[in-house]
Length: 627
Image 1 (spheres, helix red, strand yellow):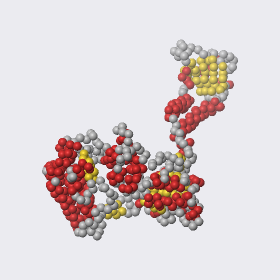
Image 2 (image 1 turned 45 degrees about the horizontal axis):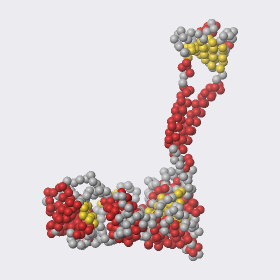
Image 3 (image 1 turned 90 degrees about the horizontal axis):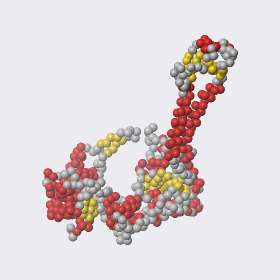
Image 4 (image 1 turned 180 degrees about the horizontal axis):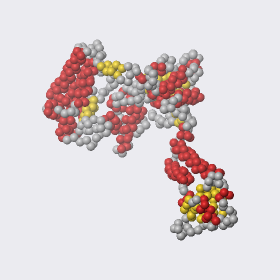
């Protein structure tokens, strides 16, 4: 039974995004106001005046003739406002003023201006405080507006309210046991793995039994396996069976561009777990921070290495009273640092392999139990087809079949829809826009039937699942062989029959169309056949003429160099012998294909004719030709 995955942060904090609709107009208004405030002091006050610079004696003469209505003494400048004739001189709407620059030491009495002229007002202006505030006001306005803009930007990013004070805190998620219920029975394909983890469950349920015997429970467990095999699900099942909190985090979430952040998050994670003890910490993708440290000086990732050092310190700091289990998961155990793998740290190393045929059958039933499916589905047959499928792949298969069923407006998922989903996942969608002409279609059909017919005639090949000349994204045509059972070993006889099967497509083109119509479509078949033949000769010791040594490609590289040298690890004479044997094996396989096609030429033509008409031939239809 599958469960819905939900998570929450340890501190239960929630991020509320800022609405951009209200921020953008306000930000534009603030920017415009800032520009106006900065330019305001520089707007010339004289836009409504017409000023004329005159000498001091001229000012005195005009004063005596009562020409001014006001004289303003502003520091060392005398500004005299005229009281006559603005219109007659063409300055409509503007006031004329005379400007006199006074000597520094002159005072009002030195100017010879007497207050006897009662029609002229003389004002002496003290600008000390006014000049101060006139200079400070634009600065204050600019500072306030800059602060408002800064606050708006910070609020928009959510940095101040959410991240600024928690940057070095752990980002582990605490799973809700009530919603994320996973039992060992839900992990139907990992019996051996569950047995290894049963001791962890017993320790968390009853630690006293182990402490009385002074037994050291394996607190650090490493789960290794391909992606999608259920490592996270196993860890969650341990937590649920033990009824303890489950903290989950990925290795990449520890490391940031800032130094010491990763180490701080490690300390915070283990501190939170100790407060919740007994508890389980699950760290996925540990290879992100646990890679082998750089052997030389410089060139390493200091932040990642400091994070790894802090983890090693935490691993050594657990005593027998600490009820915390740490489970790690990775699919790259080969790159982990030796300090992580030494005895005393990872006391349990559990390999979570891909499910076998019995496991796949049970997994399909579990995934199907959450959908509306028909009761006549042959799960054993589906399990035999899905070789090398993981738990996640099988879940995706059932989900994809449900989508196809809904698209066709059907009420229940049938085996036909599951098979259709299987072909879509493995071979991708049909490419309807790719249309071959009649000549290409005929050559393709003879080519693919050649693969299928040789595979049927030879005793050590897998059964034919489907022959198709329908274009797909991954392959424009295909002859599909699927094993009926899981095979861990491959024999020499099976390799030889596979070579003949690969060559039959090229052989069929030669026999039915002649050498002038041999196409490029067999290039992939030739490449695979050559690789298999070289492996048989150079790696697997399958021929007595060349054996007792591994003749594989040898890579020579230094610890402190970025470059590497590659070379053959044997002589030119041995190379000639290898080439000769590979050519002999490939020639034999091609001749076998030619002989079978010549013997069953009429049957080949009949199957090809039906394939051109129907474009696909299923396994049942293909077997009917040999009944």
